[in-house]
Image (cartoon, rainbow, N blue to C red):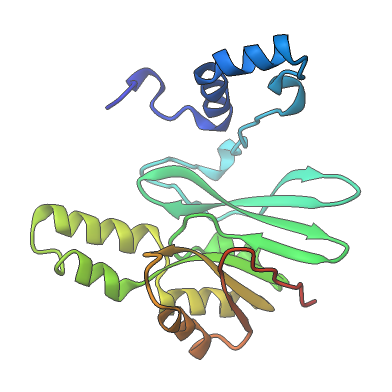
Length: 215
């Protein structure tokens, strides 16, 4: 394992390492161009997971929970839940509630009961999707140990086309936007299969796509 003393630095650690890696350029811009230091502009904070949830990255990465309040001001209310994306944990989904509607973002996840709870009646659910037929084809149905490992990873850490339709339906999402396609080369017609199993509005993501909220 790389850097066992800090093998999962989290968002705050990741931010600090990014600043250190780019220190030469950042110091030049602060001193020579009188730019404000990044730490005055941004603050990286890791989500604190309540101990009573019993979260464990290996044995209990997605305990049943109510959404956690992450941020709230006069513009937006942000909540989050733990989702399942083995072997990485914690993994989160987020919901943004505003006067104009709500948007829920799945992040990387397998089908998640917590996400369904978070996305209840959301105006727009943005969710990752994986083509399960491609997985078996790409890795020869899992013939070798490595191929089997890749099949198991993809199917246990992501959400297939039929699974996604069930998640969106269970959440009662008014509309569904697909993104984080695995693989990105899959034809649009294949992703459209979600629409045959989900009754809401379906939006297949592409660059510069604008999706209206539908309360």
